[in-house]
Image (cartoon, rainbow, N blue to C red; front, side, top):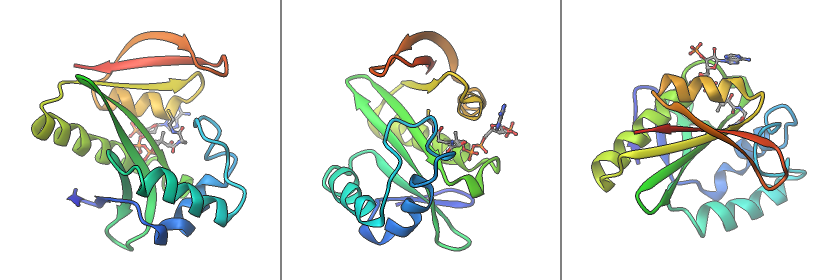
Length: 159
Ligand SMILES: CC(C)(COP(=O)(O)OP(=O)(O)OC[C@H]1O[C@@H](n2cnc3c(N)ncnc32)[C@H](O)[C@@H]1OP(=O)(O)O)[C@@H](O)C(=O)NCCC(=O)NCCS
């Protein structure tokens, strides 16, 4: 478990299903993500088991200290000498600095504990809030590419 000023970053558990469903089932909240918008709480539970419990490495629930609510997830995908970051925050909690606060802590953790010094992150064209988070974290633009659905993606890097 990791603590920041306002957040707890911890392993995701099945009891988080309601909180994860709340934003994963919302069209606006999932517009730019790589997963398909959830259709039922049961589907969310299946995904939690398969993706976040059976394969928990680098996946952290972002929990608000003030009310113990899970408001998002941050993922650190370790790829040889670098870590690729991904994130989502419940739209009711956007623009309060929570994603940046969580990401800063995860970057520090991977720097210190795993000696990783290269971080990457990508966003789909139009996802300005994600770009802003990357810039606030010190990432710089690297290049653009097309993902498997042929959507233009901007790739950023922090060294
Ligand atoms: C991207 C996301 C995780 C950011 O979470 P967050 O907790 O709101 O992020 P922060 O509050 O730390 O920073 C957001 C910044 O974006 C800015 N922002 C928001 N909308 C913006 C827009 N349309 N244009 C420019 N900047 C924008 C905010 O003002 C804020 O910057 P500031 O602190 O300088 O004011 C959140 O918007 C989200 O979950 N989006 C949907 C899922 C998603 O797209 N995930 C990423 C896939 S790559």
